[in-house]
Length: 339
Image 1 (cartoon, one colour):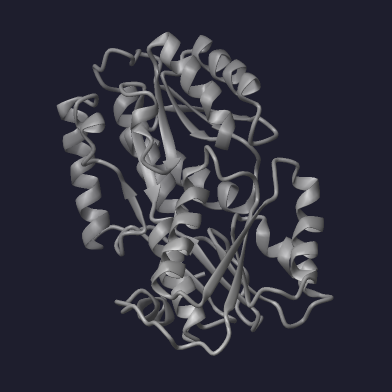
Image 2 (image 1 turned 90 degrees about the vertical axis):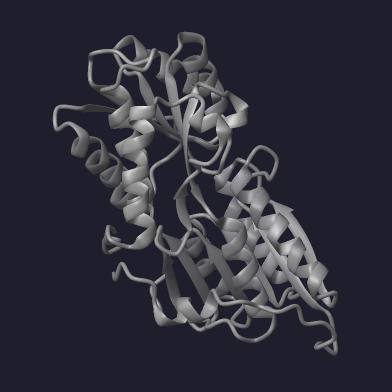
């Protein structure tokens, strides 16, 4: 899989001027949230971006369906949504969604799907997927964790142990995020040990808290959280013990200032807005899979937030600024492995 943004992607993320009055009939767009919107900044940004498109193109009708936390129910709910034959496009986001939507599409060959934060091999003319370079996202998080655990910050200790607590395993996690996280941390110090735990779902904050406390008992002082709603348990446990959390996907420093010392973000709002708008205008290349990264701004560190600058040491921020400059100007990048 190539690491550079494809030509289609370069065209895709151009400037899109508002267009009104182009459609003889309404265009219905179904949004499937694999989980719930509340408490999930990534899903909230998807919904907000889709609604922004609907405001600019009044002929667009948006319908949102939340799948809930029971993943066993997602295939049936997606199939039921497709079976209505109501939607020109179904928009969703999650690494697990391509396989679910593929299965649903077998009985409904005309349905088109736009799936963010995912990958499906090119060639299916009813699917468009967009994958963020999460090898880079993981590397940024690991590099920051490595700097903090070896720093003189008040919550750091001498153990050189960092942690990662994830809700569930999935291909991008195993092939991109965790390898990137390890590489980033061990670039700082090859002796850093990574404690890795899996919750088993995206909502069990109590179990997440227990795992975090167990890690901290063993000397972990920085924890990467990729756990959805269960992240609350990780954050509260770290907050109670004066340790640190790095969050994925969204800028959420305000949840626990001083405890959350890094947010490695994805610009889901921009990706959804530009993809959906081009789809509605008939300009999105279905049958393709696009890849976006730090150089074009879709993967980033939220380092302009005062809750970052005020709570992370000057020395750590200086090293992170050097790294992010290289990512942003393209002088340093990481390839996405074959999915």
